[in-house]
Image 1 (cartoon, one colour):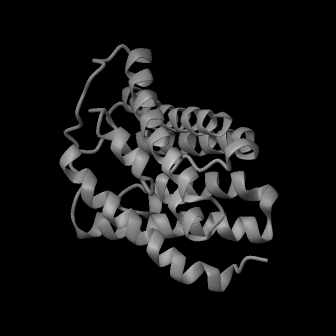
Image 2 (cartoon, one colour):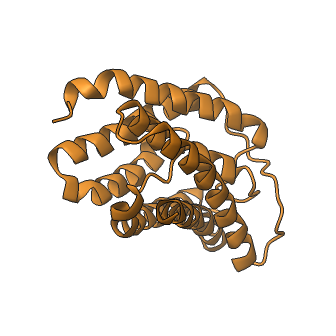
Image 3 (tube, rainbow, N blue to C red):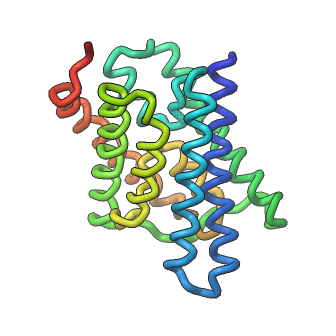
Amino acid sequence: MQKLLAEGIGTAFLLIGVVGSGIMGEALAGGNVAIALLANAIATGCTLYFIITTLGPISGAHFNPAVTLAFLIRKDITPKEAAAYIPVQIIGGILGVWACHIMFDLQFLQASTTDRTGVAQWFSEVLATFGLLFVIFGGIKNRPDAVPTLVALYITGAYWFTSSTSFANPAVTIARGFSDTFAGINPSHIPMFIVMQIVGVGVAALVLPRLFPKD
């Protein structure tokens, strides 16, 4: 229960960081999308750092079904643990989005109208997810103490070097469909994003054990 609570709260905070900073950034940027995205990226990176640092010792700080699936493939967690983590991550993410709507006095229930689709963005999600797992498992292998910083820096950068702005997380993808704000994604475009994120996990499962074998 402690692990599940950590995963739920951590994923909720992650979405608060993503969606809340998107709302605030867009409101203050005066129409400058680059400034809004910069604020969004920095706030998301900061959020990742504090949730991984504080909750990592409890649950492993997945906050992401793709990460949970990767750890399951490596046999670092059991199928039972994975089956419990993933729904909690999704629920936590949606609750985080709703918390943002309350904070910013927006309509509570929303569906995004922001289109995010096409081969370029789908490929970006494969690369973004592979890159995230590369950073996590490379960090675990070589600098475990640096994992929070590595993940935070990777996602902050990947907001800018991927055309999809690096969702790399099925729970985040689903939750962002519930917010018609800066960070939203049209619900009809969610399934393909998730498929591509799973493909990224598959690529990582083939490549990363050769780079970072378990001791």
